[in-house]
Image (tube, rainbow, N blue to C red; front, side, top):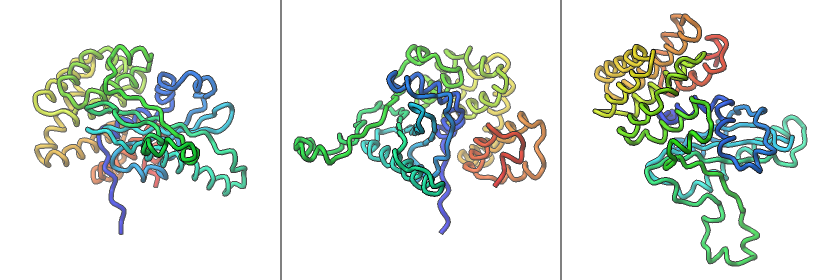
Length: 334
């Protein structure tokens, strides 16, 4: 039986696009990890790793990104889970630990295949980037999932894993706190858009309040690609009057009016012709084709035909490859 296609949501696509860039991820870690860890973590060595072998446990509910780096000059992994749900998952410590175990199992498998030392195991740090209507209200440590009466037994305490994840809950973080992180404008905009995506009015206010950062991204070398991702994200998470106001706010970014109008008109036309879901898929295809044109000037006819027939998840995979691709062939290599 064929494996069901993984649904890619706008939040997933935005997180993978922006935090799939090591420099952006490093900035996020520098602003959120404890100083005692940052003192020994070499973020200049940070690189994105394949996380497909761990994401099965989290499919459909969170987006995950795995990084490697060195800690005290030894191999380490940083595993980030972004949860964007209307409710808090009380089992996140269990799921996060499961993901970390998969990373260790992958390390053992690779060490045996290369005939290198298995022990000591690499340090695995799990961070949950969370946003929900309520904010995080559940446990962050695995041992907190057990009955306190049982944990009161010292003998039991020694037999239960003591493990936890680091939480970055942006549900209630205001602009002042995010600006205090001194992040790249792209990372700042990613966080504030994710934070306010549930409330249309708040999102419109945020776009106006961060207009200078949108402009800085738009005018930076290669920044139009990042800006187009923000445009598509806003268009897909807003609707009604708030959606129209959000579009107007994006149009007000100096130099970006024509780009925003083009995307808005395409999404509306495709949505009306094909229905909302199908229209979003069509807009995703259009975004990918525009990004390909921006980066490589021309798109071969066979590639255009392939994109126009592709699913949303296929387009998102190709969009991720586009970041580091040096040719159109790199994007579509099987």
